[in-house]
Length: 429
Ligand code: NAP
Ligand code: HSE
Image (cartoon, rainbow, N blue to C red; front, side, top):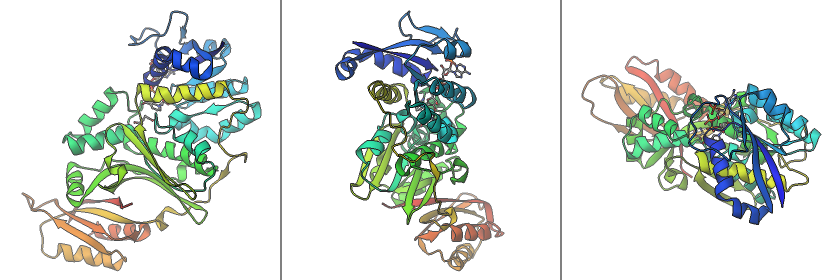
């Protein structure tokens, strides 16, 4: 029986999940791979920290980075720390030393993936990252292998467990945003800096990784339009429900005649769609291939054991692979994608205007929208206790983002507008 030695940088939520699965599922792992996986060293920041799970006594814990990197005889280095600077250094050194690397770090891959895949290729080693996108859902392998025969027409997904947990809790249990975020953090779903989760940045990192995986092209993070969920209020969730939608944080990419149209944004999703039913820390990814048609993947997108499961699958795959396939494409280095300017995208929209109680408000807003080629689908106005900040909701037929931006700029200058208008796209199918 072959033993595979693992050096793990980071023993928090994901590292602990990985170690637990190695122990709890030892028999099935051996039956499948014929190998035993031994954690030999672990890098942490704080050696005195109380940990709710510890691997066997033979595992050497250290907080000395040099000792971890140079003293390691591991076959595979597993990076589960997060962050960029130190993680980049550890991953680079491991690849350059001819070791396979498994990482869950989408931030690192989004910013330095191109460089790291080049180093891995030069050294003939694997850099695997299944857990970096959608936690336990095997979407990277599915696109790289099972859907390899397809041109990918589009990917639309809920890719952040924390944001989805917050929106679900606000919607089903009436929780306040901050309470739901605190719970998601407590449950181990949130990033070290949860701004990444709620501002859409984590979803953007995952989209950059997914786009590379699906198209073999680099969509630079800086070019990706990103909106988060911090402007969404309880009233938007209620309006959306009344209109037959659920609000979700969406990552999307579409191939439009060879150019990629991509973005991260909160959207109203028709309640009949599978995406609308994805609750809590769950993620979902709908991939449409030109041969397979639509394929839908659903599962836990964050958390210790689901993410650990994806990390261990990568470790097992690499331990028996002679020629690791990191990106799923032969071209190297990965070229920049042709990008469709975001303002040329079109969608149906939800607008929530906040207005003072005055005659003619509806008419003025409607006129400005018509002037910018935006056709109204529905309008909802509710009585409000005071005369200020009365919400008026419009949904639209398909409109061009450029026209929407111009119309909202004009409307938000009108004297009766009391707060900046909230706009969200609507996904019907
Ligand atoms: P975490 O719970 O905060 O754990 C991070 C670990 O890294 C801790 O053990 C910490 O040491 C160690 N660490 C951090 N900075 C260090 C430093 N400068 N020197 C030495 N050790 C350091 O994070 P996590 O949730 O497991 O996430 C790890 C990675 O997986 C991140 O890239 C994250 O984006 C990704 N990820 C997380 C999830 C999830 O559900 N949590 C899902 C998918 C991907 P101490 O324990 O001593 O503090
Ligand atoms: N913070 C991330 C999330 C972890 O909530 O989805 C999984 O990548």
